[in-house]
Length: 216
Image 1 (cartoon, rainbow, N blue to C red):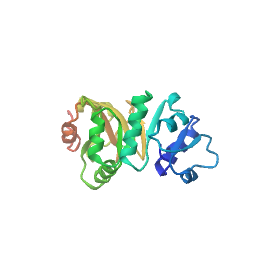
Image 2: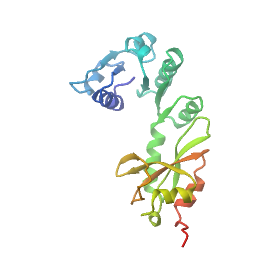
Image 3: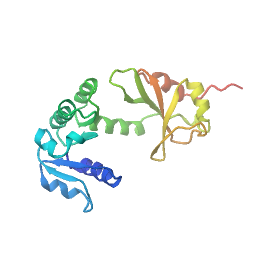
Image 4: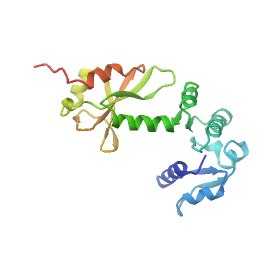
């Protein structure tokens, strides 16, 4: 739902990957953002409307993304998709960070645009730190992202995991995210994503923003 810049990009990517896609927008002119070879459905109407959702094929949908420019519209449409039509994989774009937190606690995955942007900017402005990149709504599992200080460069991921007592799930390197493997070593500007119990990033921050304590 929503064929703005984000919605059009999502729809185009999914369509080019061979998925069956339907895009809903109240303004038919919004569909001009889609490429001429877009093969999906273009449905004009309100994404909160059950009849419009049915027309878009919501009953057969594997996933639903509400990415219009209105918080209320996005969250209502996401709830209708999940609670009325039983779509399990639902995500809503939310500008208000307070609302995003509340809805995540209710089990509705959200992308808080303002919060994520500010966090990304601060990560590059401020000294090396750690932050919770993702957490389960129950709060018992999280992904903690850390950019180690230079004294960690060159260490094998297996060594880092042994020192941290946590598994490295992913690494962001040169603008791409990849699954961590035992043969990798830390390179300059790597951002490591650790699988952690709970949502406290303090332990990993203190560890990886200080020189590693290696045995002689």
